[in-house]
Length: 330
Image (cartoon, rainbow, N blue to C red; front, side):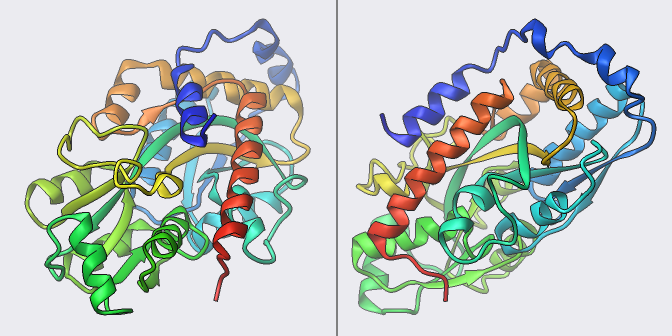
């Protein structure tokens, strides 16, 4: 079973019937949690799709828990900076992280990680998966993916590809494509999607990879970006003429970003169960689902144990990809 199929199957289990074992609200309340505001650390800059989704969930959790959920953006190192802050926080349920799973499934295989993905953090709940778009800026003359590759072959190193950072999913996709196509593409790492998108609009590089989101789709429709390919299980309804990387012959690079909520290891089980239940309830709300689906992001949800298994499977698959492609951080 391919990693994309595994992810798709997990995404299909969105309509989650929460088991009675997760209904531990009374136990959490007996422990006095929460009695003060909760900090939700977002591992990417303000303005991106992860920030927008985290703030929407924060609003729902604030209403459900009776305490403010304050979003705090801590970008850098492909999301690892934010999760490192969470990993080193007190395990009391008052500091949580919202991030893609890349810092747990990619970073450990590419160098010395800031934290131990197995010991320092616990997955709370999967929130969504987000397609990854490969976009040409107005600086690029490529009208499709094939033209982009031909230009990279003709002028080694001149095509610049901006990503959300070193060890980010976009970085691995770039390396996978470069290795298979035998082309040299210059990597431009950012600390997240916000500044990367702004610099793309001012044509400071030729291509970028970014998650689907409202602003991105608006810029594509306005002709400011050209959609060349997408990492997704199938073509997007909003971009039916844009092929997936799998269709183009790059199955290993055909990746999507999985986002979720994490907590420091040691947070009491009743608190984790309450958080899981409340986020699942939020993801089932029509207004939350519509907000995500309108921009091609797919709400997931589900049990924490299933999320942990998905992360472990993704990590093993990435380790094989990185080793086979001889990918290293400079």
